[in-house]
Image 1 (cartoon, helix red, strand yellow):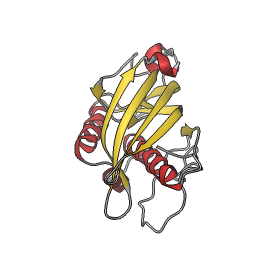
Image 2: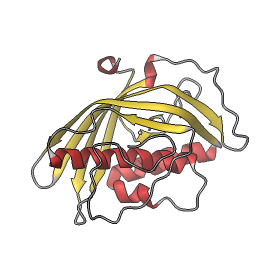
Image 3: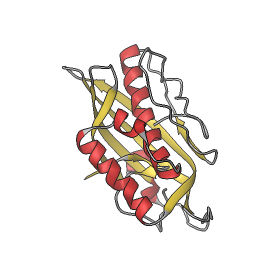
Length: 203
């Protein structure tokens, strides 16, 4: 298991797989709105807006437990913040640091730069499912989930040309295990992320 990110329509792995077949947390196509699990609160959150051709679908948005739902919501927002930094041409991405810190922030920045350095982006739909939250003591939690990036495709960052010839493969199914900590503002920030590609439990 390698320390990875989440998002990019797929794995936050620093390496590219299947000729960049996968290009992450939460909302419909081109939207900054979180899914059903992202309940409203009084926190002043940065806006996240994805391009119209990038969509993250999150299944199992609510658990019935408000505390767990809040964790899921910020996990989703983190995934979206990474996808935004890869696919949106902007000078700043405040949501990235808002929802990540420590090792998770460092690995996220490295992953995003791998796209920038190679002038790559992505398009398509990524599905997140089998999401489970465990609450720990002292304001910590863990979230495990699966990702299906079989419907994402590499995109040239300059021309916008999409390569739809890239075929889906087992490595497009990824299992994630993340740790989150609640900060003083009440935001669940992801601190570490590990992932397993071609995870049989996600197929």
